[in-house]
Amino acid sequence: MSESLSDISHDQIAVRLRKLEEMRAAGTDPYRTGFLPTHTASDALAAYEEGADTQCVVASAGRLMVMRDMGKSCFAKIQDQTGQIQLYARKDVLGEEAYGWFKKLDIGDIIGVEGELFRTRTGEITIRATRYAMVSKSLRPLPEKWHGLSDSEQIYRQRYLDLIVNADSRRRFLQRSRIVSGIRRFLEDRRFIEVETPVLQNVAGGAAARPFKTEFNALGCEFVLRISIELFLKRMLVAGFDRVFEIGRNFRNEGLSRRHNPEFTMLEVYQAYSDHRGMMDLVRDLVQTLARDVLENLDLEQPDGTVIHLGGEWREVTYRQLVVEETGADDWFQLSKDEKMARAGEMDLKIDPDWEDFEVTNEVFSKRIEPTLIQPTFVTRLPRELCPLAKLSQEDPGTLDVFELCIGGMEIAPAYSEQNDPMVQREMFEVQAGGDIQNVDEDFLTALEYGMPPAGGMGVGIDRLVILLTGAESIRDVILFPQMRPE
Image (cartoon, rainbow, N blue to C red; front, side, top):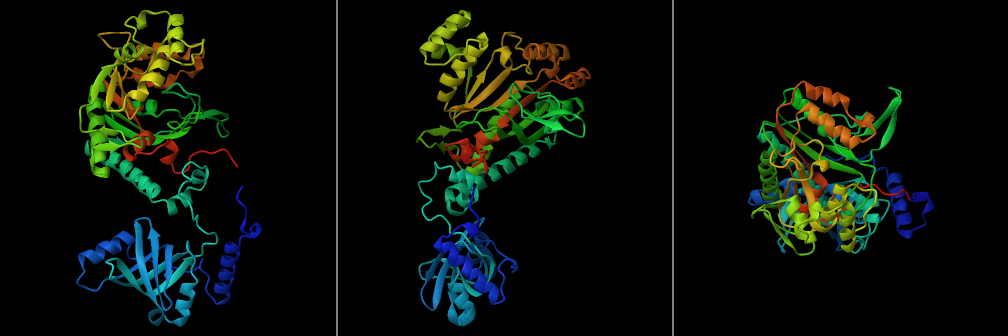
């Protein structure tokens, strides 16, 4: 647990506390001083470039990051959401008293500055300060040696510090914001409408995962946090809304890894009178558009130096073909479960004896094949047991009209030709539920019986998409405040 200021004897903190007391004694409370900026740092830089031949007065505010004391003048830099801008303060301009307080500022203080823009002899656009205001006193010093702590829990526990001092983190999360905005713009341009559906649900439907459970006191029953957005969006198709999407949080009470977090963000999109092939075109266009608009580059360099070519060919290959290639067994799908388990063991895979036959094969796919799919790959014709909400393939009823889009060695988006036959859907739900029939969503099946148009549906993992597009190492690097064990 973080210590309170009164518990810390750190010299720098003690000095800052004394400065705060001096300011208040002099009649200034930095936490009650207002300042209204007219320009962000980037706006101010742009304003000078646009009107370099004319006088341009700006008011900007931000956190003090650099201070160089030159006696009767100081150069400093403040940082806001958009970047940094340099300040130039002179004793003969600010006045002796104000300049004296300016020199007492600490790195980390938040100030507002007003003045005319000019370019220094070194070519840096700078605000010549005519007045300033202290608007928040930083009582703790910023980290001095943040570099090298990227693997420390501190970077996740105190993300606000990471964002203050780490330009790469700020860039990544600004890109994430632009990616999400770009997704909305892309879909709205194609006449999709955004909707919001319940996060608290009485049946954990739409996927096979362990939910987080809670008591709904007002209704006197147990509810769960949703594990999927899917079933309520399909109700919207029944209602006659032919193109819908939602960007929202899902919750799965399962493990943590570089690619998994119990709370994660999904885009789910459904289009009536389409199918999984329509979703192929949609997701390819979406990912390429985001890469062009946000990164201005269709070639993505990954942390290990690999370059992913989004503008190249997006391979399409069946699940069966990939499994046969990996195992070297043309007869893999004719083997008994015990034989598959033995061969999986030879590949250093840990197999649970209680798994079903298809689960053994899927472990081979998940652990040995998916991590090798670096360039964009549509994996098609998955086994019917894996996706109870998809349509069976007419050519091969043992498989489904679905794809999993894999890029960078991870699944980015699964998509289905959605099952709209209520009787087939009930049968597949009951098979999935086994003896736990109470987990069948009867309300959804009732809705389906009113008639749902044929449709394509897709889920895109936003966190993984951001990992891909920004070159992040881990899902924790693209989630602002990932879950951590309490200190």
